[in-house]
Image (cartoon, rainbow, N blue to C red; front, side, top):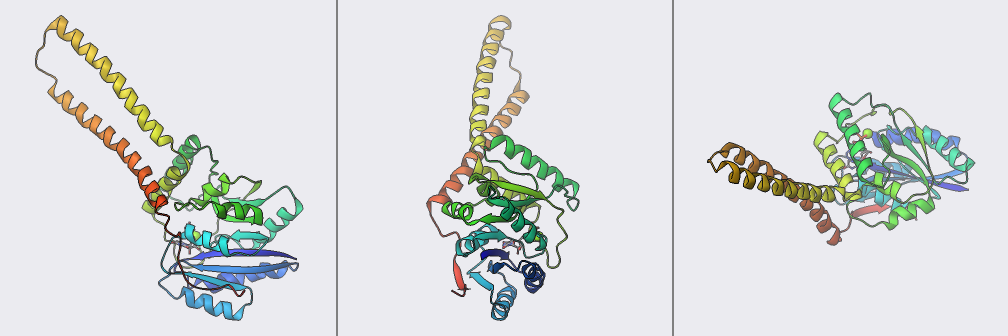
Length: 312
Ligand code: UDP
Ligand code: MG
């Protein structure tokens, strides 16, 4: 009998935890030949999420939970789930039902019917709920990162996916602190089939992501999966060196031919401001990579568990 582990990261989702389980069990009932475990990961919620998890875990044999000592972020919650899952197949799902549980059946059947596949992942091609600004920046991000990084980033990819054990082991083996799962999933390779669906609305509670958090997340993705910005900043440096050599020659020739009247103050100030801007920007890029390297070498734990019940 196959076993599917469902990992559900939760941050302040007291309302959604029981609703999710109710929806999920409809699908679980349909898949009679499969054993399920649902691992809720409480990512340091400040509401009653943990109490809801404990309650559900008492009532339902297949419900387990892990609870962090504070909020470590969804990436950490996903990793904790993957590391503690015992299934042959492992899925990651949001608790807000934006990842419809009925898709699990479709994904499982798809994986079963094709031995070659290791993972079924979901993406969306319609961002109707996004405003113009978010749509614009989302597209821009995917354009930039696909040009810069060798790792393929699929536009509209969700974290919702069903993976075989072997692929999950590969993901766990990457112990980096700055985790950008969308890149890690793609980095490990294996055969992934993409299904497209339309993301339904959040059923209850509210999203914790805002525009600035999303920007920071996008920058994390770029820093984690490409060092091209460093090359670009070095390239800009070379271009400006060449330009200054040309400018020096022009000025010397001009002075020899026409004398040296004192002018050009305003343009000089503009050039100085511009160049120091470019320099600071490039130093900033280096700083960004340095700070990531700093957090990596400290080797701090990615998450800390306060309590758990995995019923083993
Ligand atoms: N989440 C988490 N830790 C966080 C933020 C979010 O575990 O710090 C969980 C959240 O409870 C949900 C999932 O990650 O199950 C996706 O979050 P959300 O719905 O806010 O994101 P969106 O769907 O808007 O991308
Ligand atoms: Mg959501």
